[in-house]
Image (tube, rainbow, N blue to C red):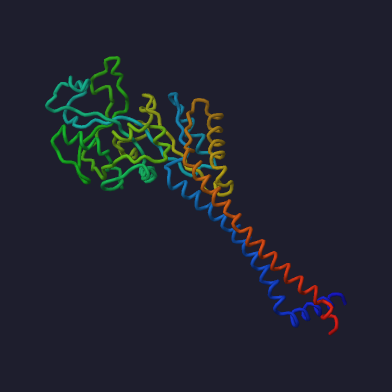
Length: 350
């Protein structure tokens, strides 16, 4: 009986007060739409900014060891961390140009004291990075040419290009092929290790220069690990070349050329935890590495995240712009309900 009365009352209200009822419906719809759109915007803007964060930096965490053999412990530990979905590796070594047929007894240091100044060797920094990792550092580099697409291509900085052209009277361009050697050890020049043999070199023939890069200052873990000078005066070479194998990695490790593990975290964790907690999540992962691997060194990239967190906070706070409109919607509802109450006696006469 009560239900039939409510339904009868509702239909009579709709029949005799269509405009007033329409005011009420519009008011509720307007208010609800604003609240829902604000909620959707909060969620969407957070996803956009997290994606922007990840696209504008190479990695957020890097870890290595300061002890021989320590990188193997780190590698085993990282393979069991579910938060990590990808690991790239970087080794900072050295590279020799124009070795040619010079034997290991050739004296290369100091540069002006070389055995053959008319045909000198040139040494500089080498960044050994896997191919997948190279695509992540595009924010750091302005490139004439392309990133290496296979293991027989590499990139050089514009500064190194100029030095090589001056020393050897050549013209270097993307597509130029050259021979080079990569050191598996840093010679101790302060102890008199002036000969090529102390590099324990790996030789590479007919390697193609795919790109010539200029360092572009940007948010970067690699920049924190290597420093600006290493990027500006360096060669970036794929560490997946066939000449690099487990024996080479082990030898470099024994010579304290330790691998840096560059970590990519499952992005769903960032979405679930929110933009404000990205740094906290990274710090938690880094602290767990330190607790489990005592000889590890971990680097976190967080500077750009602070700016993006402020960006998100600004956009999030824009919800307050909706409050006046929501207030108007409530007033509209109040007005419509008031009209219905004032006329309720008329309804019961029918």
